[in-house]
Length: 115
Length: 112
Image (tube, rainbow over all chains, first blue to last red):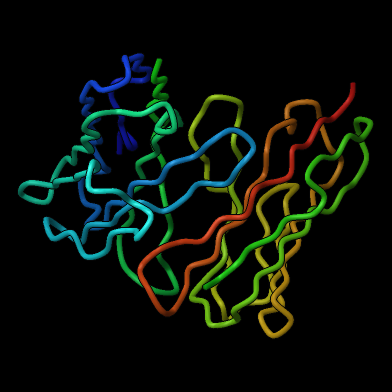
């Protein structure tokens, strides 16, 4: 169990550029979540996968955001035409099971700064 | 929509003191509640998970309680240490929907 891995740890980009983040979950975990966190706030739900299927996406997520989880393994989150308001920590979490026993394991996050 | 509130937003205590952090939620239809710790610029580390049918869970100096009917949970930290300084967040797993709802956290500083 090597934990949830996220890359890169930091990303600085100019407004209007596209960025992509990667998350490698714990190997046997079937659920994968993306959250966004800004300073002083709790994580905000973006989207969630059960194996390779994207089952839920936040209504707050604009069309500039897309996520994939090919073959139910790693996941990528892409932000197109970045805006300064996209600056945040992007957190990935994985879990095994559902309901009462589901426990989230988080990665260290990717800190995005849009200049 | 589930709303999660944590009070206080910040807390400063001298080393050795026992303390209580509070978490409240508006919808009692939950599967479980988790407490997390977050160090600055880092991800979240799970501390305790309480299933909705349980009343409390303990791990070392930490004890978490859950009163689902009143929509409240507390995290009790005994004999606080400077290494406990961090932000503590609670999250509830809703029966409807497939996501965890987070509070804004309590920033704890333990003064040596």
